[in-house]
Image 1 (tube, protein in one colour):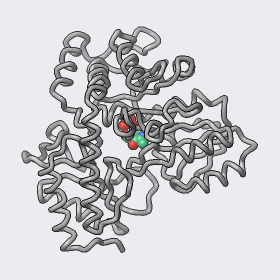
Image 2: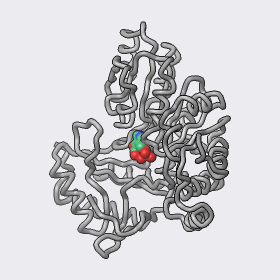
Image 3: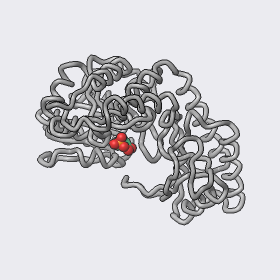
Image 4: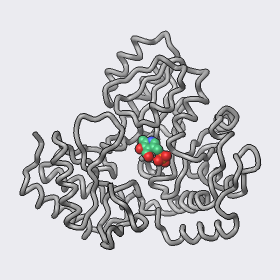
Length: 370
Ligand SMILES: Cc1ncc(COP(=O)(O)O)c(C=O)c1O
């Protein structure tokens, strides 16, 4: 674990020294954007820090309504709802839809927010092998008497793999199941307009797919959101006790969300740059013979079977002025990961230095695959 002495950008400050930063989830480089900081400062001057009430009592402000409108516009949906945490999005959906299913089917590497979000009285929970749609279908077939709900991460947080959503959607249609995608890492990243995994697979607007999303990663702000048609959003607003009984998102966060939803619409080149940087890094990692994943996402893991190799590589990066963490994260995995994250704002020089240091480590230690 590191203790930051600065905000996160291409470089961070740590122990009074600058480090090149390939960690976190600041995919589009927006979390420190100077214009966003100006908007946020103005919002604090106007509204202070906290609306100090839940949205349904006295906590709804004009900037919340603006944010929900901006999100609906960005997602090309009828409406959107924002709430205090991306982590809670799966729970909001799983609880709001509870009367429509009796059995959950989740990927074995599901994010903890999915597992925590399953209502306590849903006792029929099945895990299919990671991204294995044959196994998913076996389970759906076996339990077809139940009303079924499938839930998966869109991009997996640790491995950067994309869920095979096209095949999962096909199964959802075949077995008349509801489908939820946790798109925390795909919002702003995947799809022609950055609308996430469904758009990546040309399933944008498809019937029966619900997305749980966050503003805390590519959007550079904070807080969860769900976008859908007006009736669905109204249903979530009325059913979610978390939404109804927790304090509204604070002004600086709302202002940041308002800035970034508009900004990413105007700047599609950010996504293009991000993809280019991710490909550059992933190709370099593969070229060194290290084990990683194939998808085009900005999460580029390096897999190790021994924890000491992952820790040693992360330490070596740090000794050479680069932060790339060896990850300790509550997702079920049988390998150890050094997780490189690309950002649209990384420069070619920065990436070349990252790959040069990685090569030096590899030359000393080999690929450490076994
Ligand atoms: C897949 C996934 N879902 C949900 C979350 C939670 O989102 P937030 O951090 O915005 O609450 C995260 C990570 O933070 C995540 O990786």
